[in-house]
Length: 293
Picture 1 (cartoon, one colour):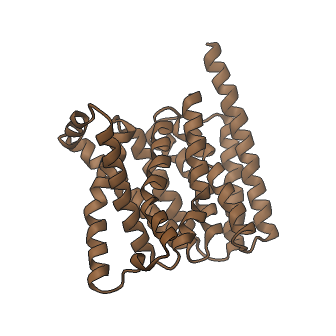
Picture 2 (cartoon, helix red, strand yellow):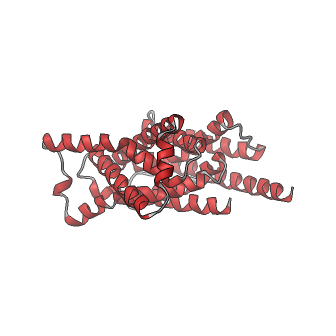
C-alpha cells in the first residue's frame, strides 16, 4: 500500500501540472493535440516494450482474450474522451472547471466502489463524502450553469478507474493496449486535417513542436504510475488522493492563468479540503486496525 501511495502521488502531481504543458499548443484545435498525444504515446510505449524483454508473450495473451480486449477498448475510449475535454477546457479558459471536475471524481469513485466493488466506507469516510459533496454543490451554484465540463471529466475518469480495477494485466501492457486501440483513429484524424489543410502542428515553433513530440512521455508516465497505484490501493482511497491534482490545477488557474476565483469558490474548496483531511485520517485509522489484526 505504501508503494501504491507514492505512485498515486507522482501521477496526480504530474496531472496537476499538465495545464502548463497543454497551454504550449493553444494555437492547435483540441482534436489535433489529442491525436498527437495518442500517436506519440503509442510510439513511446512500443519503444518501451521493445527495450524490455519477455513482454510480447503477455501482449499475445492480452489480444487473444476477448474479455480483456473489451476492457482495453472501454478504458481506451474513456481516457481518450477525458483527454479531449481536458485539453479543450484548458485552452479555452476553463481551467477552474477542470479542477472542479477532478474534485468531483472522488465522489464518483466512492459511489462506484460501493456499487460495483462492494467496498464499505466507514462513517467518517461517509462524512468526508458529504463534506466534499457540499463543497461541489456550492461550486456548481457559484458557477451559475450546468457544469458539463466538470461532470464529464469526473464521470469519464471515475469509470476509467473502475475499469482499471477490473483488469489483471500488467500496467505497461495495459497502457500499450489502450494507446494501440485508438492509434488508428488518431492517425486517420491527422491525415484528414492534412488533406483538408487544417493541420497546424507543423507550423509550431521548434520548441513547441519538440514538446508535442514528447507528449507521449508526458502522457504515458503518469498513466503508468496511476495503473500501478490502482492495482495496490482501494478505489475509494485512490479517489481521495486524487485531490492533489486538481489542487495544483486550481492554483495554476488563479495565479498563472488569472481566472476568476470568487469567495463562494473559496468556501467550496475549503469544504473539499476538510473532507480530504477527514477521509485521510479515517483511512489511516482503518489501516492501523487492519495491521493490528
